[in-house]
Amino acid sequence: MGLPSSFALPAFFEGRLSLPLIAAPMFLVSGPELVIACCKAGIVGTFPAKNQRTLEGLEEWLEEITHALAQLEADTGKKPAPFGVNLIVHKTNKILKEELELCTRYKVPLIITSLGAVPDLVETVHDYGGIVFHDVVNMRHAQKAKEAGVDGIIAVCAGAGGHSGQASPFGLIGEIRQIFEGCIILSGALSTGRDIAAAHMMGADFAYMGTRFINTAECMASNAYKQMISEARMGDILLTDKVTGINANFIRQSLEQAGMNPDELAPHGKLDIDKELSEAHNPKQNSIKPWRDLWSAGHGVGQITSSPPVAELVSQLKAEFHAASTAQLKDSQKYL
Ligand SMILES: Cc1cc2nc3c(=O)[nH]c(=O)nc-3n(C[C@H](O)[C@H](O)[C@H](O)COP(=O)(O)O)c2cc1C
Image (cartoon, rainbow, N blue to C red):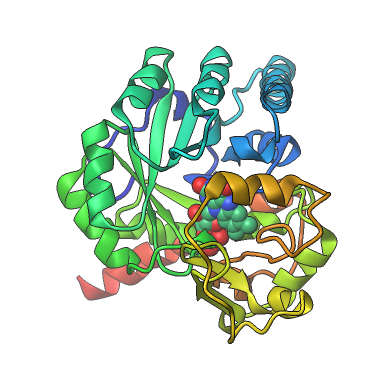
């Protein structure tokens, strides 16, 4: 749907979406309740496989989501939006193969890969009828993703929550479109329906929103985290590699609350993603842990002041998206 895009949405999206929107996967905060509510409201719900500590736990969630969505379809006669699972493709993820096997068994419609883009994984997902979107922060990664045969490239631009890029969305989307005919997804600081319309105008096929969905009733984040997001402004977001070893955006107040000075952080050693994620899950770890105790958010925080149920948020985003798109069309006629 992006203007210069020649991309046709994969068949399983057709007639199932109320907005070109993906609720992005977020460590420790997106779970089945959020995914099901998103798909029910007609947007793509996702979660990271690492939100479960074990493969048994991951299977339970896949079972819960696929069962709930099938039930919804049986009850309403309407297909809910497809859902997605985020897999970390990195040598420190020792159970990637098993995670992929489970996703294959449950025919997860959308796999979102982070870090590595691997042709074998793409082939496995295509074989069962799924598609693969891959996260990138620059053109070198976009080129690798294209070569791996992914169906979509997620441009993680400046101001994104979690591990953020630093590129301008105008520059990155434009250059990706020059080399890639697949689906382009824009990530970073999108919070409103107007932002979705703007992503569309820019040439993205989908908008990708993380932080906005932390502040929903169905999200697993604590009320204190949601409250901090409601009060935070863009100036409170700190981009630093000193918390995890690679650049990520954190809310300064969450560092201060943990007794740290955001302006005097000690350097972090090399990224060990598996260690970092498993420690954050472990209640026995009583030192300060990123993601669990240090809270991440993107530059879009200033637009977020409430935590409505997903259905209400999606209705609001739809109204804003249509109002902005209509106004844009009307305005453009002034310059003919
Ligand atoms: C708390 C938090 C955790 C995240 N965890 C993950 C993750 O596990 N995997 C992933 O691919 N992206 C992760 N992200 C990035 C999001 O998927 C998405 O790219 C980002 O939130 C978009 O920017 P926004 O938050 O400004 O909307 C995370 C983001 C946040 C805010």
